[in-house]
Length: 325
Image (cartoon, rainbow, N blue to C red; front, side):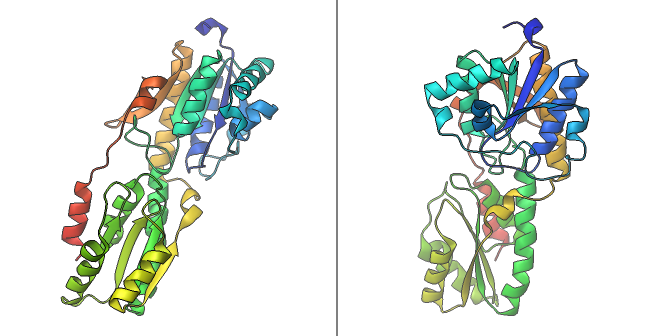
């Protein structure tokens, strides 16, 4: 398909919602309309593409959403789309509704779906939206900053009661396979210990001994941060209380981290990425993933993007260990 055949751009959000997705939708819609494209919104992700849950969008369709969390297009998991039959059905739906190119806002799973859809002849552009910041090709993903700020706000409130009762609070934050939220939030809230999936830990050496050592310097309350991929906060709290005698409570922040009004960083990044995605389509450049690299907006071939590997800066754990004593 040549650039002259692109008349209508579709946009969808897929996978877990992330603050800033609405800002990205807004940017895609308005950038596209400004360039003369028609825009259709696909609701409920790839599932909506298969079922035809598709609506026309105009400039006012995205009014008053830049500050809202979640996604006005909704999102859903779709097992059918993982099958070749489902992918063909989705591609046929695009053609039936006149969608010539599709912008997909989501994570790695969403981009794999976009790659599969591209193989069926539908040009796609991916925009990274996930609070975990675990998209390998991008330094930063939409929603990450807001999620961390939400976690910090909640833990700051929790600290008040933890200190009042001389307790240990074990706080579980999101991050099944990635410790980005945990490692930065841990520094920001002064957690004594932060446990992330990327670094194995020893309970006695890394938690219990450290707590006892700081007790000798007069410390009487403790915050232990654990990423969900490491284990359950409740189990760790029980172990800590059994071994130290310190009243220990678990708090799982859970999906509250996904919600809320996006921060300035997420709104601006989403707006830049949405604009860049439409710019690529207008130039006839397809099947790319938009990304940030050293504060610049760049893009990668979708296959290359999915093959990349991202490492976490574990030196942040050393910093936390030195100053959270």
